[in-house]
Image (cartoon, rainbow, N blue to C red; front, side, top):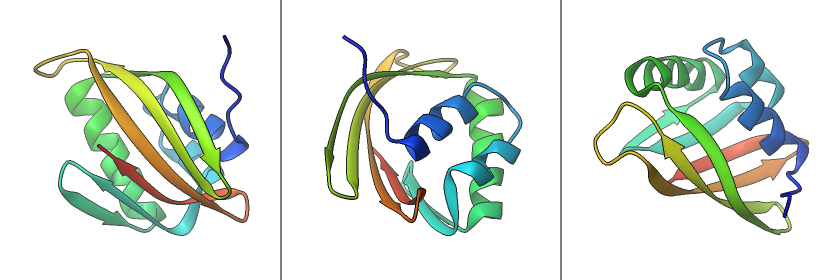
Length: 108
């Protein structure tokens, strides 16, 4: 079964495959907010820094397992495999989309 991803989520997952943070401009709004590991990251520049740091620290890959969408809210369950204790893990990504971009993302 293939998962049909909304374009901003698809762009996000493609950006996850590289250490280059420039592609995040294609999926996050300039004033987007990310909540991950108990931190709140605000704005595209800060999000790019967060992504660069987490990719370097954990060297992970993301495999989407399932996805549901209710209007602008998108919930994706994914398997992360990488250099961290307990790998692999399943996490839930909660995206809120606005104007073709990710306005917010919470990872649990």
